[in-house]
Image (cartoon, rainbow, N blue to C red; front, side):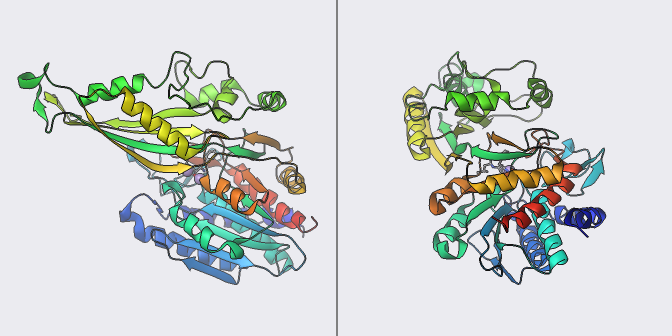
Length: 454
Ligand code: BES
Ligand code: MN
Ligand code: MN
């Protein structure tokens, strides 16, 4: 039996097992889910053993465990390191889910549930691809190291310590990641660039305590007003970020590359349907694809303070808060950008408030050439799985680990994603298109197999 037939014959089994994985609410951000995180790590470890790995470890860390496995029984063959994450984003707001986040359900060819696309569904694609190869041939075609973490959605802190302390152990000829999206339906994609991410929080304090807005209003500063004025000043009328120096280190993208990106089979109509806004804005002088992939941004993620309950409460709040972030592109330096942003904000703020400024996380952007022969192998494997030619894309999202690994090991990083941009990652009704899940298993199995002849 050939590889494709073998995998085709196990669709129901694979799907049933994925549901089991998705039912574990492995939310890394919440301490109440700690037991579920432990259970998910154990689940991954158990299924790596079932897939054929004899060396499997659950590595405890300061926060959530990592799962590491290796099989180095293919002398003379390349060694690949596969990376993914078993943790997921919180499911809130729960009332906006059509079916419960941790009770996965198939509807109209899609599987709905938290983690279906980001990233448990994609991790499972690799588990089943590897298991199929092992069952068919009694061994893996190449040397494989697997690293699956539980802190991706909260910044991968423990992972980075682990890599620093285990460089020899993790050494490989290539890094393989499935935690991105395809350009669109029927367009298998290989990602060669990601944006970086700095995440910030500020707390503004005006009056030392909340005040009656009638007794004091008119004569005291209101930190909420100051906060909104501040954020109104962070973009100009061309939607450029006003932080001085913000664009200084942005690498110029060649005319050839811009042309290639703008020619990809991508439709503004699909983008607009997915977003559903009444109208669109973005940095002047750039197309939508360029705004998403090659330009840095500043986004307000959340803003709060004062009274938000039922009815009215006349109050001048003592404090106002905001969470915001900057997406970064090569060659912006995350630490330098954080300093520029802080300096600009402190300069813009009036003397009427105190400002506590925190950088919650930083992550480097990444972009790399895709000339190495392994990219050809990846493209051919996707052709085998999807029956379509794969395209090379950039992405606007961030996986800081990829840049760190690329810097550390200087090896090709092959990002093959099976999500779609409109599958609601991080939002209610997250889902994965089941055909992409099934085709993904075939493509990835062929990829590992074909790597043997590299
Ligand atoms: N899988 C995503 C990253 C991603 C999404 C890459 C879409 C490309 C396209 C990852 O799980 C994620 O959500 N990353 C966060 C950053 C992280 C440091 C919390 C992000 O991009 O916001
Ligand atoms: Mn992810
Ligand atoms: Mn994510």
